[in-house]
Length: 215
Image (cartoon, rainbow, N blue to C red):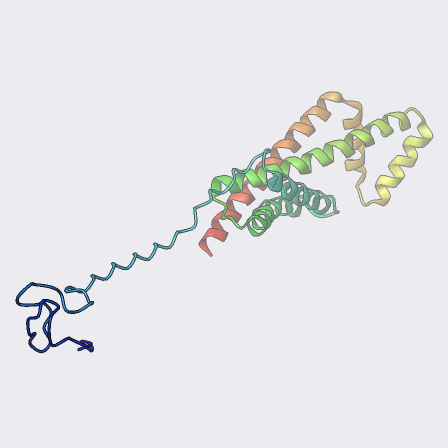
């Protein structure tokens, strides 16, 4: 209990006060400065609830996604270089399949977002499209150069010797020379190349997304 302080023996009205009197029993005048009731303590303000970070939706994988385009260009370039090596055609298909899976892995790592199977197919398709575009550009340049070369018989023989030195068989060399002379076969070859170059990496992207999501 706190100190009650000094209490006068007589009130100003002349009445004698009992010890520890709060009021004068005659005139009712308060004899202490302290309040009769203690002031109620103000309730403490509630602690604010922690704000959860807003969920950021992963960007859609497509041609409007700059990161997807950069990853697709890099993966497509690597796929083109690997498939251009003198391996069996089955290995080239594996390179395209692996390029799609690698594109999903690289995009997932750089963006920090998981890639669903549908997004993995898109990422692989973009990779294969870049691979096809690179091949088409180089093929067009080579075709234009070869169209000029084949007008000279000596240059044609020189081209055949170079293809032979690269390891191509005589049958493949003959087929290659026939393709350059037939526009219909060129269009058919490009169409088949487009299908395989985009479908197989898209399949690899779907497989890569599924495996990465399981891990």
